[in-house]
Amino acid sequence: MTFPMTEIIDDLRPIRRPARVLYVGTAFWLFSAVIHLGVLALDGWQWSGPVSFRKPLVFSLSMGLLLATVGWVLDRLPDRPRLAGMLAWTFVISSSLEVGLITMQTWRGRASHFNVLEAGDALIFAAMGVTVGIMSLCLIGVLIWSIVERPADQLVRLAVIGGLALVMTGLGIGQWLVDLGNDYVAFNEEIPDTVLNGEEGVVKFPHAVAFHGIQVLILSAVMLNRGRYEASVRRRLMRLVFWSYTGVLVFATAQTIAGKAPVSLSLWGVGMALSLAGVLYGLARIVRGVFSRREASMPVA
Image: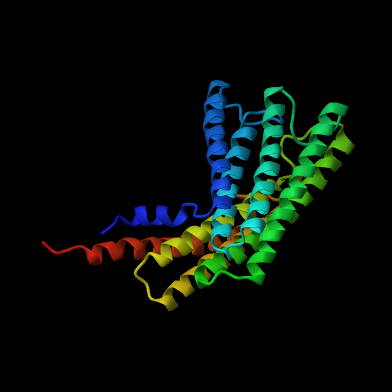
């Protein structure tokens, strides 16, 4: 029998050409992340500050994952080469331009975000905003397509539609983050290292949580479809992971709105911790189902 992880990797590979285009983008930006990890190390692990190699590292990694995610989703929708190709090429070009501009600014020794104090930097930041707007339209298009022509598999359907709904929430939080950052620059005439709401609310925290929930859901669906559980148990576990992750996002957002740090002890922090426990419990059950299936099928000596 094939080792379970090999089967899971096979399920995550691109199938059609639009997905392969996006996966090429993934490979490029993951390579960029590795390079910038090395640069960050050589720079003495300077993580803080508006000009830090953490930005090309984090954005390369995040965008690489998102490109592969969109490619995987397109492969689970009806085969419409023109529509899928248009979405794939538009998304890979716009996202690459955004991360490329962030990377360029870092290597120039200039802040990439909210740097509007000089005309040239302000133009670059505006261009980044345009690329994000185009990317957002692509993601909205994929969500609409997923709702109109839903994936046949129930688990994949929840992973795709539910995950994209989380991403849409992330876009909204991202706009909130931009508004706060712009207000900070206008009031203080300096560029923020981290955009805060109140004294300690880190807005990029729920923003990141929202954007990367879809990967958790996709991996859950793939593993469940390779596991030993019956269909009803698979659906329950998938719903558990989805709603628990949604809870993490809701409480993380509430924690930020309250102006508290991500790990601050509060009612919202407790809710976030309990929701995260639900996610981890569901994932543990899912992984157990995959590997116990292998153990059950192995011949007895």
